Length: 460
Length: 99
Ligand SMILES: [Zn+2]
Image (cartoon, rainbow over all chains, first blue to last red; front, side, top):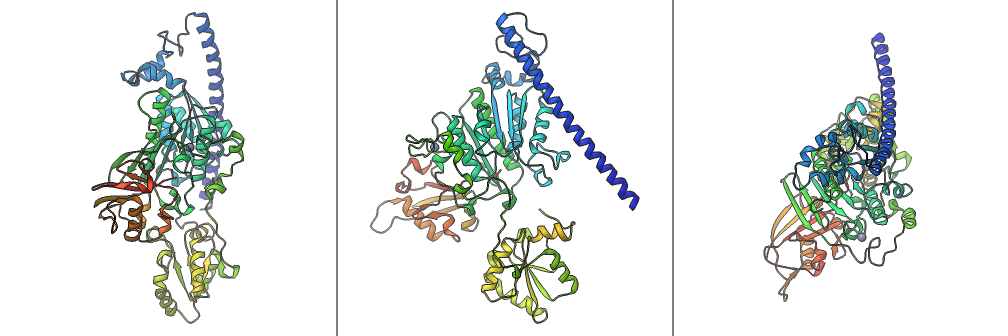
């Protein structure tokens, strides 16, 4: 056993070393390629001005559209489209598109944008790849778990198309860096997952005059529209007041079928391609609503630019400086990053750590354990001998808790657990008021149980 | 008056997770027309089973809910004053933020 343990940790160490060497080499390759592109660009302008013979490889093939023979071959199926053709392809090759978020929406969007030949493609994300991302964030692979999403996405784009420029922005988008980053691109794709980012990105696009392709998906539904395009509305024209935080579902809480953001992300890439190449009718003043279960896509007509809009309206004076000083987290009452909420409702004596709970179980303390998660969560995994009473039905099911306690000895303790330790506090708070004065919540919920007590307990 | 009401983006959770409701709503006594304001009051009383504050604020919908009358933003037809007609389709959809 010991020898095997030593062997596997040696292998793990070697894998780590190789991985870091690999990413260093990839970084050097892309630096060198960027240098090469700069040199090529300078050469190209020189050749154009002197009208001399273009270089044989990778240069203009001299037909007036700027496409090299390699480009013609690579993009031939798009060039053959009468309604797209060389004109649209050259526009695409000159365009720059920024994708904010390399997650469920950003993954397919980036893959298609890289493949179709967008000249410069920027990726913003501060997160790292996790195993529970892979079902929907299809640009990432197992090999990149624990590494930066931007690096992972950039490597995937590069392996599809090494001839375009890919720019990595490994940081969260904030008021302090957004103007600088967005100003370098023609079109912005909002592939983020939270309300404050959506307001921040839309406002920044209005300040800079950039069209914004905005998509969202959760559960089995998706939505898509183009903001701030050709006199159309901005995000705030539609949603001047942020929704209550309780109405902002997140994939990590509500769940999402992987392909649903994938479908919306593909549509986002398509709208960006249309705008960049000046082809077709972008989805401005219209919104696409997608319902996966009934296989229905509905395109609805939405309002135009609102004259009263505080950011893009007639009398609006929303400046770059105001943007930089705007507090989006306060405005929407929710955080820009995904840090889960950590409630602190109860006094210390009404709480117990997962380790302490484990000790009490081992000691054989008589008790009842109530799990207040929704029933479909309980089905995924649960602690032995716990009874499921979802928070929403707690009031109606108090008698069940009473009888569970009576089945134990007198003075049996009552413990409450949930996924992360927020709902369990709400439940204990309520139970105290209803006379269950001994109720205690397990701090940090099942996540802390998995972290501190049983690493084999499944988390989600 | 026969109307089709649809709830989406999570709002269906407020009405027993049913997305499409074929309903019969008539103008109030003494009125000959039904407008969106009347319909919202009717929906709140007859369809919303829980957390009405997740659907309405005051006498309109809460921020973050788009209302579409026959696939058209109600902002373009007069919001609460939009007059409804036989067989109209009204969609209430909560804006999504996830990705
Ligand atoms: Zn606006």
